[in-house]
Length: 599
Image (cartoon, rainbow, N blue to C red; front, side, top):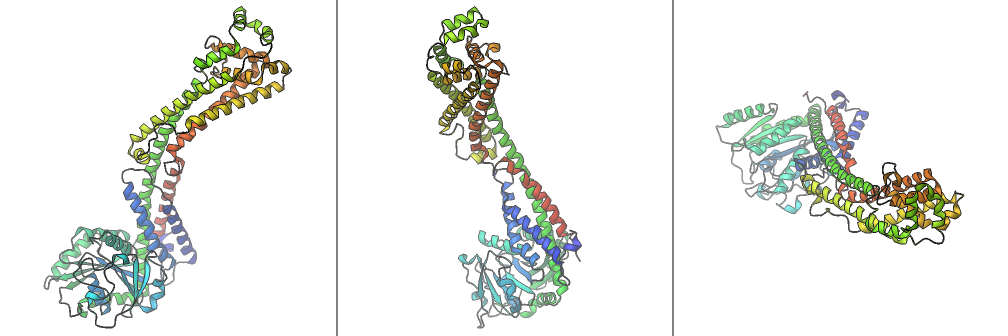
């Protein structure tokens, strides 16, 4: 979309298709900003969050309403420093007190929007500033002094906007009396910024004593960046000093990129009994507003410049937010990598411990040796492995000793390994996060340096489920064998225990006979199974059982990992897309905003 196509104009209007596409783009931007999460405590993140909030507010208060209603009246916001005389100026422009002025600060708390009666539908609908509740005011016909005009200073009225119809306001231009931009009240300052961000036109009021203050210039520079039409009103200038002060201020405006700003000078003048300036003091300002009112093409130009400039400014803010999202993405990935690494190491250690013979010691070995016996069977091993197949049937005459004790020992030993390694991983991940400010902020006061409270119980349940799966493997394999009577005489539970023993020595595709661990324990297990099912079947069964055990261990560790990873926004993967989407939207907004050249 080029700048010519996208520039709004009240004379012929932007085409319906262009306007529809612009609104759709802006709605997409709003959706993206509303869903943007910046959860990590990184440098500059507070500023980025504030930028997100202010960008959303400006979309709602000004950009979207203006793009949807290009021919709506101009909103001219009267803003400025404390005591600059904003309310007095507004009263003078309409010719009678309508908004409160006086020495007590802050005077303006409840903003008052003055509009011509013909323009009422544009502002009563909540088209602009939708978050402010509408209050319909009336013009006071009596001779009420300015010190008692308008709304009383009431902090509870901050979220409302007083609408006043007044024929004295030029049609097509509404005046909004805003709170002080440097008010001692945070709410006042916030509201003033919100109102100025929603303006098509600024009437910025300052005084001969304060025109060089930092706060007004910060706002004026923002206006310059948005290419907004600004009228600077230099108020309360001592008689005789008008030319000198105006020349100095004009030079400052030119240096700061506001050479095109309209400058009006209001000399220090005594107020009448109602607190009103004489009409001639503001006549040039009123004439200028009336010229705008009478010139539809001029109003369209003001709309075009302000709207395009604001959209370009929004594009720049999206680029800043894209950088913030990228920083979040990088930091989130690092935090996620720290957790993944800690638990991957734990998984590797569990896998090694459950396949290198570590578990074939202590209680497991003792219960296994009780199970198979140490006499005749081991004498058979000493006399030759080749004779084992012939003697195994004789050895297992009758019922073998119960396998339950071996299963229980396996469960206890394996559980101890899993819990220990998971605890080490949690402690490692917790330490890595606490060494990082973003990780510390995500953890807060929570202690994740050990496993969750029910982890040991879950581990035991998973091990028992695995043991049941191993028994199913034996049952399925034995059902297809001719030697069914032999393996049935030994028992599914017995052979299941044997397979578990083989798994615990199943390293790199090798089985017990090739590794020879714990005094021939695995050799016994392997040969028992080979006598029943054959060598190839033993390798396959051991591999399946091993993979199943590793999968269950990974699931247990995954639950512990999620305690960390779920704190990174919606998960570490969700950090990938926002930066790219924001960059793409920023480019589209830049095109929508055009080149920014003035007509």
